Image (cartoon, rainbow, N blue to C red; front, side):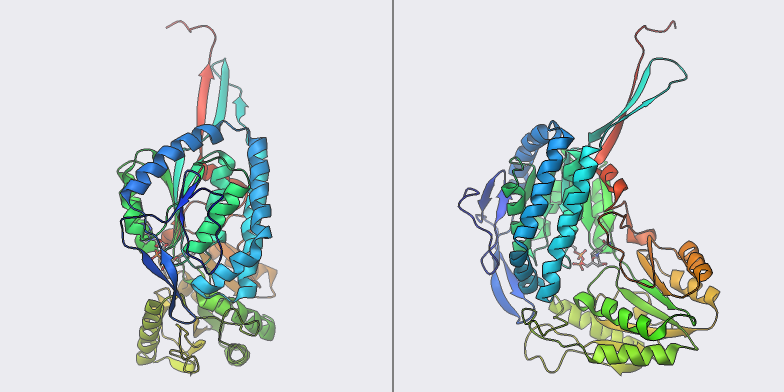
Length: 491
Ligand code: NAD
């Protein structure tokens, strides 16, 4: 199938893209893509394997030769057109995201805006990409030239199936790299739509290719290849570690955006009703399937009761249902495995003394699909598994503190370090929290940490490298030092 023959449309089957050719052909068994709101099969995704990888690598090499020689000014124009294409097709993206992973459609459409923002921001970085001339102590010309790292393999998850690949594609393309993207097997149509936007924007063949299906079909071959000079992964810390180990064999550059378990500290001086209402919005967004979702709540004991009551009211007001229905405010979980995991974590917390204030299990009023009730646990002890393991679902574990230093210690007592949040009216407390919380990002009185114009990154086991902001393009660049003296110095 040529680009003209395939048309990515939500509700139809996805395809993979090698060079500028779409196809569904594969000797490997296809995988079913399930609508999590109904549990029914939407369509199949074709699975790529090592043969597809070697063909994609040939095209990537050709694409890289062309794209890396294209001036940044022209690359920027293509990036801006990709952003325009994404916006033009935002309704298609919204429908595909809602049906493939269950996000409420109105919010899913909004993901197109944030994805487009990454391409717009990085277009500016492509235009301003130039080197340095350094005065050398030894004479001659000492220069630094940025060069694209080469072919990039990018792996993205299902929870933000458009903006997370965009965070990888935009800086890689701005830098002049070619990218082989493997979207999640749960959200392959979003991947096909994104590939189509890249081609429609005039990106040369082989610069962005989309391999679909079971990750095990493509990831070992991509990781073993010496031609792939960089991998960029977003997903769990467990898989990230595995990919880092495999990358070591060919000494690839790596960017890792991994798991999180964000603490939320609510101080006594905060605007409690407003904080509780905003926290409910932040917690239950995307049914809690957000890497930076607040997932350990530390409430000052003097305001804990007030915060909890308002938070419960907000959680009770959520309306679960079909993500395509405008009245729905919370969709299903993306997969049934998540339901089992959450039930286990809730049962463990209750066994250790937590009080179940709301929810706790599969939604009884939903006859089909993977719906979990908005859940609130109070007095959760520190040894409960949910205080260490990322729930990745709509469960809020609440605990109290009396001393801010102790709250900070407990907030930091985790292997993760992605996001942390606090509510306070005191500028001094805000500064202290920002300085002492061990996380890549801190939100004070808000949950807005994902900006195209600022780094999104984790510390500790939450990741390596930066996505977003001015520095992100460096993840896809080598900096070549050249020292030229015109006369060979005397030995
Ligand atoms: P996961 O690690 O199981 O899967 C993530 C993606 O990697 C999926 O598309 C999966 O198919 C793919 N994958 C799995 N095994 C692979 C392999 N061997 N090679 C290549 N790809 C492979 O994670 P998940 O449970 O699907 O996603 C949720 C996790 O992602 C959470 O831990 C969440 O915190 C994390 N996440 C992090 C960020 C961030 O920016 N830090 C953003 C979103 C999600």
